[in-house]
Amino acid sequence: MSSVAARIFCRSRKTPERLGSKPRNIFSAIERFGADVAASVTGIAGPDGGTEEKPVGTVWFGIADRGGHEVAKRRAFLGDRGHVRRSASVHALELVRRHVVGWDGDR
Image 1 (cartoon, rainbow, N blue to C red):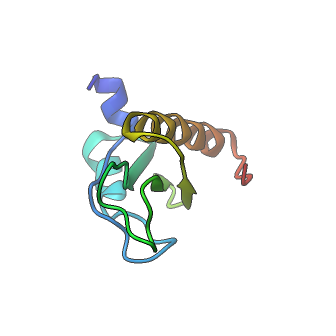
Image 2 (cartoon, rainbow, N blue to C red):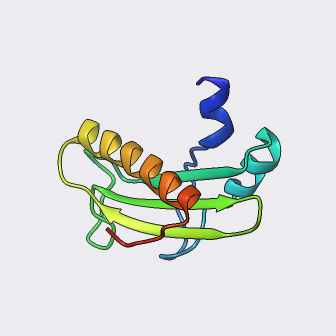
Image 3 (cartoon, one colour):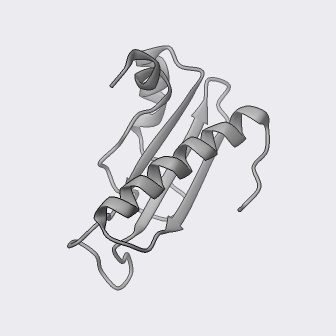
């Protein structure tokens, strides 16, 4: 991971206890890397590991900034493991972009 990517993106393997909770390491990423914004992604890419409540393709996103603003989102992606992972990565970066420009629409 490049130093620029490490400064803006932190990946967590901790599954949130409930919808809307943020993975706990997002603020430590801001402090550790000196970032202004951090993103956390966790989910079930498959092919195994899904349940009826949390099927394969379920991904949680957390975005936070140094000012204490937080956004948590949950999305479901269809496709194989590679597609879910790529889609989640692109969506996480889009959420960071939206956060930086001050737009928090649900699209």
